Length: 280
Image 1 (cartoon, helix red, strand yellow):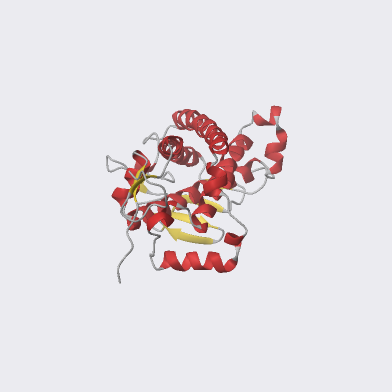
Image 2 (tube, one colour):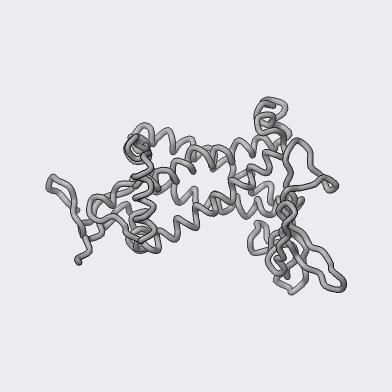
């Protein structure tokens, strides 16, 4: 560890992530995984999405996962609007661990529980929803206290300039990652992504979850009304869930490209070895 004053240089082992950030990162990763898998089982109960207050079998969905038959052949499909994509073996029609054909939207390996059980899925989903909501609240409050949000997530006026954003996009496209002390600072794309998750996607997941609950109508009906109805809230909830999956995939790709051992170690121990400058 560096003890003398001054900016650290490439190759040094420094502290990067606080304990609160590391704990929240791993707890949140498990929480969101369980919520996604249990949520997919809940979706299997009615694999259609609508806009507005009402939605049932005879209403027209904007998204639907199911199975159909053309002559003797049966196939699974994903339909968005009027566009239908065959997904046999993955969505709508797939085989379980016993080799039997199943006609639920998502396969057994993607859901909690693995066998269709709406009641158990709701128990898992609601239990971890409390962990998500309370964890996010505590993390944001503590990040305000220790200055993490102001220091690391706040996007300055200069960083909002199109030239700066475009430059960072170009650096990412060329896989040019910062070295030395610069590697300790989030670039503008990271700040936008993390701020979007912390202040948009996760709060929307919580609010739309409340909006879908009939009990919310009794004590705070404005939540459901604000999304234009329970079915609209369900659609927004579904979209936000898959945007979080997209964030996760991009995040994992960046970790692998930047050096997985160093990146994962920093999120476990807090210690990070600064990348060295590449010689010409």
